[in-house]
Every structure is written in structure tokens, then in C-alpha cells.
Image 1 (cartoon, helix red, strand yellow):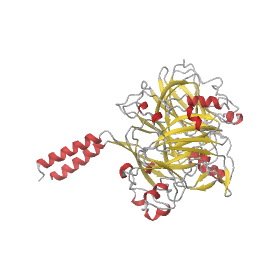
Image 2 (spheres, rainbow, N blue to C red):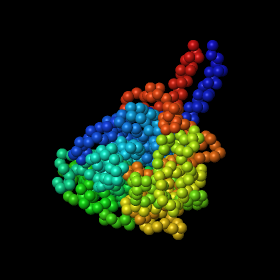
Image 3 (tube, rainbow, N blue to C red):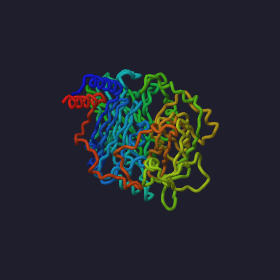
Image 4 (cartoon, rainbow, N blue to C red):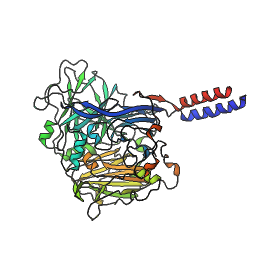
Length: 591
């Protein structure tokens, strides 16, 4: 017989637990990654889709939600999805790159579990291995403010996600082989907007019969456009005919609100604009994405055009496309990037304003000058390097090797500056100091714009300029309201400086997002270990996949937990889970 006092104690424990956990719901997804047939530029080809969609579904969540993402790999080669810009607090196990995870074998499923802790903003996911990003597999991530945190602008009337990307009609496998064989894949065959080819604005450069994208809007209303450059190589200029772009957010940071007529968006970068439908609506308008810093002939042939359609429109878009900036004007693009500033008075994931973190007053503990060079032959193979080292992914992921204390997989010896020696292929890791403050200067010695991305962190972009960085360059740094983001551009023959506070323990990928450069070795990993507190990092997942030297630990796929085949998501709060468990417990005890 269950006593009344015991039941009362159980109720107290239950209520205490639910009051603490109710704010962090769980959302469950089932995604199947597979090949689809599409003709975005008029040529039938194989693309990578998710749940039959190209681009894939939008992951729409709210700050502090817990995401449980069951991914089934229906491709014919291993797969990893990485969550570009998601910081995975204390949980690099979920990062989805080869340094932290064994890839999901063909025909297998694996469940990602992570919390979007203390984040807001616009991000995207994509496949991180085997050059698969060139075939698609990408989709949007939206992290909404909690209700208690107001937006620094009026709630928009609608939310639009746009993917702008260079595109090749060759398969990702053929492009991969070309890169390995020292064949430059050259200018893209076209620019896609949300997976569609260009509207036929000109017979010379765009063919009738190719499906194009249309965004339908209501006159007088304001929409939030989240624009991602999900391509593999090409910086793109984004603009909308006769409409201003009011920049409000980039990669998780609210910005000073400024109007732009166009914006250069480099590989891997994400921006949010408010666009007000303030035109007459007598006709449709062009949405344009065109290459930057490319030769003029390839720019004309590869221009993405979608249509902004007012509900009261009386006719199709007409006239010339809105003008881009001067093609090779690096100073225009650099000054535009410098003009993007952090909104110091806005709250983001927490009630306190973004500007409460006075990054300019923190003492720097480590300085790295990282130089990338053009591809070169190392031991007879074409490779790319950072500080003279071309990264070689080991068969055993770094994070697993670190966890199991396996020696010889990697070395904590990435040089702080370029070494005066021949380039080499190696698995060299940056040794970060937990809660240290690192200054990193990216020096681009190549002839094209490069995008650097750091997983696990938002860093402050404090300076960029042409020429070589020197110690005196620090006098030009913005130490007050530099924007915090996870991807920054470095112009050819120029440098960009960032500051990053290393408070997120884990093994984190630092890479050039331009896919050929990344694939040939321009990446490293940043190891951040808390020497005092073991619980500063999440423990290894129970469903971890093992490979390399740890292959004997791998369980049979049949033993792995699977969710339903439904593509729909399900939200379950912690309170809901405890209510169910509590009801079952009380029912069984009452018997």
C-alpha cells in the first residue's frame, strides 16, 4: 500500500524538477538524406536532398531548445552533417566534421543531440565530407528569441529564407576527382537561388523553360530575408530591384541597422535583412545574386535571378538587372564589411545587451598569424596549406582519440606563425587555453577571396586591410563594436583579424569554407580543454560511431535506436516527459 506521505514527497520532487526543466523543450526530427534528380540549370543531374527536398527543410527552433535529429544516410558513401554557426556549448561531439565524428556509413542512421544554448539568429547546415556540399544537402537554421527577449525591431510580417549558391552541372564526385587531379573546375555553370535557375531576363544568358524561384509578398508589409551563401567557391553580391536591404542580424548577432542597396555575401556567410514592400506593385521585381571578384564573362553568364511578386502585381519584372558594384573593387567590399557593427544595446539570447561583453578590454593570451597559400605540390600531390601544414584527417577522429587517450593520432604543435621550412602534410592541432583570449590574424596569400569559419564560437571581427599585417596594424582595430560572427572573409593580398574568447571546451574545426581549399588541406582543429573541471564538457554520446583504431568498439547497426519514418517534427517539453513518467509511476505504485 502506497503511503500518503511518500506520495506527497514524490509530488514535491516532481514539481521541483518540472519548474527547473520546463523552459527547455525537446524537438525531434527524422531526416533522410538521399539523391534526387533535378534540372536547376536545364541539365538533369543528381543532387542531394533531405526528405525529398532540395534545399532541405528549415530547422526552426528557439533559444535553449534541445534538438534530437535522427539522420538516415541513403547516399552511396559516408555522410556527416555539420551545423554551420551552431556553437554546441561543451558538446563538440555533435559538430559533424571528421575531426570529431566518424562518418555515418551508407544505409545507417545516427542521431544528433544538441542544445541551441544561448543563441539566436540565422545559420545553415550542410554535408561536410566527400565534396557533397557541391551537390546540395544544405538547409536553413532559424533560432528564434525566447519570448522574454524582445527583438530590436518590429516583428516582421513574414520570414523568407534564401540560399544563393554557385552551381556546377558536374557531379560532386566528378568535381572531387578533378580537384584531386589538379584540374581547376573553373567558373560556375550558374547561380542558384533556393535551388532554382535564373528567371529568363535575357535570352542570351538565361533559357526559357528552366524553373525559377518566386517569392510572393503583400504590398506595404515588411519581411525578414535570411540570405545564406551556401555555395562552394564564389563570393556573391545580393540585391533586390528598387528595394533597400535593412541589415539587422548576421550569424547570431544583431547589428546596427543600416540600409544597403546590395550586400557582398561570401562563401558560408549568412545575413538577415528587413525588406519593406514599398513599391507600387505595378510589376514584379528582380532578386539577384551575381559573382564577385570573378572575370566579367563568367559573371554575366552566371547570374542568379528570382522574382519578387507583389500580390497586386500587374505584370512581369522588366528592365535591366540592378547594377552590381564595380567588379574588382576590393575597397568597396572591404569598406562595406567594416561598416557592419554590433548593436550594443540589443539583447540576444540573454536579457543583457550584446555590448555588455567588453571584448576590447580583455588581455590577449595567445596570438596566431595564419597564412594560406595557393595550392602546391607536396610529395607529388596537390595540396593547400595553413602556415605550411596541409591537414590530413586521420582514420580515428581527433575527439575520439583524445577521449580514449590514443597516442600518435595528432600533435598539439600547430605553429603560431608560418615556419621557414618546406610545406608538409600533417595532423597538427592548435593548443588553445581554456578561457584564454586568442587573437588570430588570417593573411591571404592566394589570389581569390577566402572565407574562414570557426566551429563552436562566435568571434569578433576587429580589423581587415590590404597588404601584410604588422604589429602596428593593431592600431586600426575596432575594439568597441566589431560584429561577432562565425565566418569572415579575407581578401586576396589582405588580412583579417579576429578576437575569440575560448570558453567553450571541445575540439573545434577551423577551416577555409571554400570547398576545394578545405578539401585539399586548409583546415586545422582547435583543442580547448578545461584542466580543472571534468564536467565542463558533455560526455561521449551513447550512440557514438567508432572507426579507425576504435573500430572494434562499434556495435551492429541493428542495435541502434530508430525513430519513426515520419518527416514531421515533434516538440516535447521536459515537463511533459516528467508528467508522463510521474503518471506511470503513481499508477504502478497505486496498484
